[in-house]
Image 1: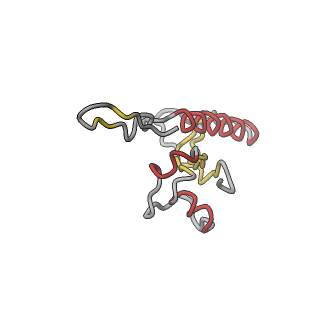
Image 2: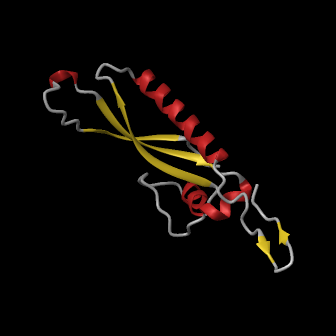
Length: 125
């Protein structure tokens, strides 16, 4: 399990043409979500890095061993959005991504094989 769930990286320069002072705010962020134990080996990548500078070694190890998946994104909010509104939207975004990773299982038939006479079911929970 990662030590954090959402990390705000920076406010991006918004170069919207003809938006004037009404241009929305753009924030880059990182989401760290947990991977179900049975699928961690499929997400593992010993060479993985993080978009987060000075990441804790335990968090980097969690990403590399597949127990945590990192997603980098950009959130657009109205110019007048408060910090609380930004935080709420990021929490909603994290929850949706955690649900996506929990439910995503393209390996549910992994290892199923035919030996020439019969099929043996495989799969990862």
